[in-house]
Image (tube, rainbow, N blue to C red; front, side, top):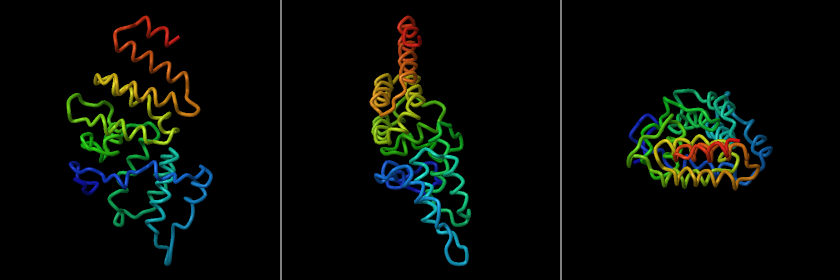
Length: 207
């Protein structure tokens, strides 16, 4: 069930984690231009909706540090539940883990919350409490630049828990993305071969 950000057993609602929609077909310049003004209204009161929009735009672009700066404009007493999720995502879009993440117990969720939980944790537990299908589906929905930036770490976590097929899907998605990094793909292939017990093939990819 959906709940507040402070409830570790709740699932963050899909509609507030719909990062692919936050780009809205706009160029990076348009996203930045539309997300850096208009934060204050009458009597210098913070316009929370405007700030949240700016945070979302910067998260879409992968600018986590900037997203945190704008999130800090919202007074703690007025913070909506989603702000805690966005603050965690601001670390995750930059490839950092987040041990204190509110997504920690959301790996079984059937939506994007499962993906952000997977990004946040250093390793994924084995067993049925990880919704692999939701993680894959949500990863494939990310904009190409975030798939490219975040895919390798996620694929390694999948390999570590024995989900070779999931790791391969992530790897192939990265390879199809514009401006794919062949070095990153080769290193992923090397790790996959090593994990499968084929050291010579791993060395070939690494070279």
